[in-house]
Amino acid sequence: MNVLAFAASNSRQSINKQLAHYAASIVSDTVELVDLNDYEMPIYSSDREAQDGIPELAQRLFTKIGQADAVVISFAEHNGSYTAAYKNIFDWMSRINQKVFQNKAMVLLATSPGPGGAKSVLAAATGSAPYFAADVKASFSVPSFYDNFDADTKRIKNTELDAELRAALATLK
Image (cartoon, rainbow, N blue to C red; front, side):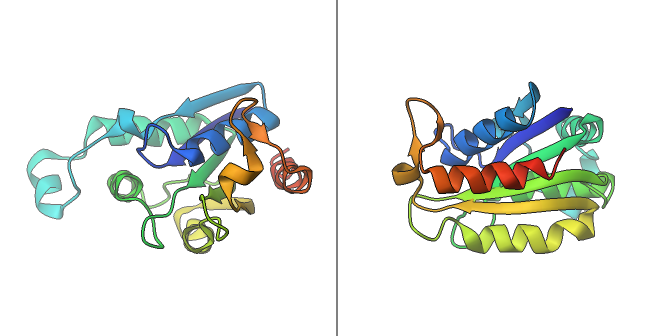
């Protein structure tokens, strides 16, 4: 299985990037890890689209989603919602085709340093993804990231949370 994984964040130290990478490694040996920093584009506007068209980087990421068998996204939460970086890239891809996720099997994740585990953005993502042709198999939040994730081994150290994550990821197979 070819899995595409990324954090919906452009932070180079993203805890969601760490979670996405760990989760994808559980699912498959064939994982493509995407960094949203490699897809930075101008802020979407209809005027900009009319003048310049859709950026090539939007097409590249859209194509990568299409080539994957499954997709794992871990959402960072900014003020209870998506990061600006993710939302901008998503908006550009939706101009290629509203079915951004191209009927791919997906597991949606989120984490945060606090006990909420970015559940607000995860709920928004899980609720809206089917409208964009996502086959959401499961969603899972890891609360209190620094208490539950071992930075040295790069894995969840809380055995109950790890088992729950593995069960969510098993839905992709």
